[in-house]
Image 1 (cartoon, rainbow over the protein chains, first blue to last red):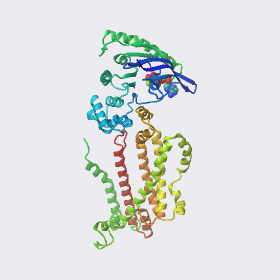
Image 2: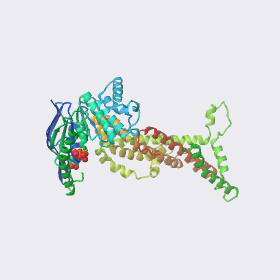
Image 3: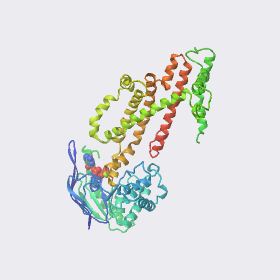
Image 4: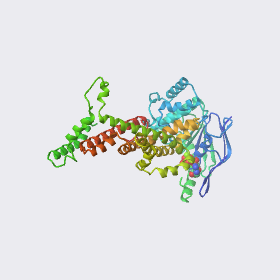
Length: 263
Length: 273
Ligand SMILES: Nc1ncnc2c1ncn2[C@@H]1O[C@H](COP(=O)(O)OP(=O)(O)OP(=O)(O)O)[C@@H](O)[C@H]1O
Ligand SMILES: [Mg+2]
């Protein structure tokens, strides 16, 4: 059953010298409850594709359907988690989580109960009345995850959410995300630079090519979770993906040397 | 180790006290003409006379509290403060919505900004002749001038505040299902408050300058009026007492505003002062 359907999607950005083809003929069919990682070097169009699914910028050609409805703009059915957290700094942790519920028009008591439930789920009860500036990066990203979980959206979109965290915090958030995912059965599209992160998390890894962004490889990861990064299977897959990503990385660097980009 | 606050206060008092002592010594030694440069003691005596009630307490006239506050200085300070507050409110209440509009809408900005840029460099003081022609004498021209002084800092900072709102907050809000009105009220406005409040602080500072000038010209009470009046009688001690009062009032206003800002911006990371 397809939850996210990406159908002949192209995205071109006009620039002074002509245009950048960020995405070219992307076709993907993501099942409900699937955990998909988009992998590729900088500038290959991962964020562009995620933003198109989120509805922040429409494809130049092609259509995206989520849950049977064509995407025309952003909406709470597709919760987005940003690398920069994007928490509202003027709201406390609890207010940040509550924001989407208030927009939905949820009754006060129900919203309070929901906020408490989420704070507990992510182990942040004692941070309820703190402002984001007083939290560590890992805590901030937990709040951002709680904020989109509050909406109960069936789809989570995550753009390098753990990219700015240290290795230990990163691993603990990855585990937490996997727990939430297996409990709530969300469909997750997760952008990352990190091959290891992709293998640790995903059911399926989509490797994109550098300019134009196309699907280079679509790999299923069959290993049981929790996955052991030291296992031979893990490392075999890592080698395989490294080879694919490195090819694209080299194309990126060649483009850079030719002065075609500053990505 | 944290410094004790009283130690810091004590240290801050050393230089002013030293200067006062020097001033007093110079006056006592007869180095300055007392007519134009009175001694600190003379200023203090005059200050007290200016502050204290003129008549002895008489229960038939009014309550004790009204008597305590019946001194000329208190009346002047209240008059000046009233004009600052009213002028500032008029200016800020006009500037805030206009600034929000110009910040949020490129169209409104393109239409209105050239006019703002042309009017903004005209100092409020330059409006004095016109304000007297339009409003006569008394509070109205003063409040007009003060509101002009407050208007532009608040306007310019509000515009800048709205324009610098990080797009990521807008995207996050839209993703959470917020419509344009919610985004404006709950995202753009709070995100712009650090700028708006710094505009408010500058605006109040300008208002305080303009009130003194306008009282020298258009009003017959208030601290600005009083020190100009004192000059006509050659009361240099009263001039200096009035100046100190102006300084203290300005300090009180600014620290009050700073306190409110600190509270409103307690969420803000790069909070200065
Ligand atoms: N608004 C834009 N205008 C012009 N070009 C753009 C724009 N947005 C993205 N691009 C280009 O499209 C390509 C894909 O960008 P995108 O941000 O999706 O890459 P990415 O894979 O997310 O990279 P990173 O890993 O650095 O985040 C890049 O080459 C980028 O320069
Ligand atoms: Mg990106």
